[in-house]
Image (tube, rainbow over all chains, first blue to last red; front, side, top):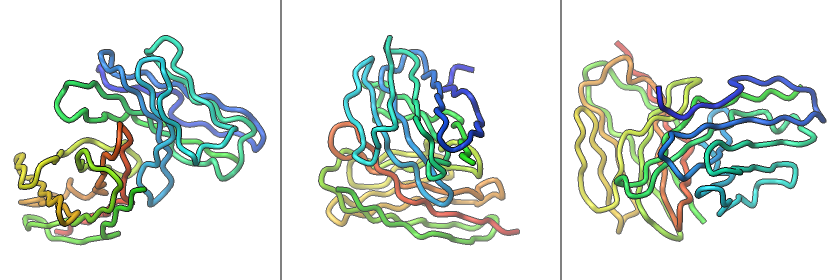
Length: 115
Length: 109
C-alpha cells in the first residue's frame, strides 16, 4: 500500500509530557499538511509544507506545537507540555501539484489522549 | 476568513436519493471538495468542483454555484455503507483548505 501512513495510531500520555507523531506521505507528493480533528468537527488546519519548507502555520497553533519536514519526505509533529485540550485525532495529508485539483489524501490519523 | 455551513445530521432510506447542502463565505476561492469520513477513519476524497455546474461520478454527484456560494453533494441509490459524515471543504488562497463541521448521514433500511 502506497498511501499516507502515520505512526503511532494511538497515543496516551499524561498532561505535561511531550509527544511526537510521524507522517510518511505518498512518495511522489511534495506537499504535506497537518490537521487536528475533534469529535463532531471537521479537520482543522494546523500547518503545511511544500518539500522541506513550512509555508503556512495556523494562528491557532500555539508555541507548544512544532512541525518539521527536514528532507522533504516524512514529517514530524511535536507537542510539548501536553494539555487535556490537545486530545484529538491528528491527521496528516499529502498532495501533488499538477495532478488535477491538487487533492489532499489523508492518512489514518494518530489519536492522542491526554490524561 | 472562511465560513462553511452544512447540516449537522440527515437520515435517508436505503435505495433513495439524498442531497447534502453546503454554503460558504470565503475571502478567496480556488475550489470546493467533498470528502466522506466513516467513524474513526480518515476522510476520503469524493469530488472536486472549481467551475459552476454538476460533476457526476457514479452514484455521487456534486454541484457548485460560485455566485451563490453554494454546493451540494447528491448521493443516489443509497446503500447502508454510505452511512458516514460528509465534509464540505473550500480551498481559499494558496493551499489552505478549510473544512466544514460535516454532515452525519444515517442510512436506514
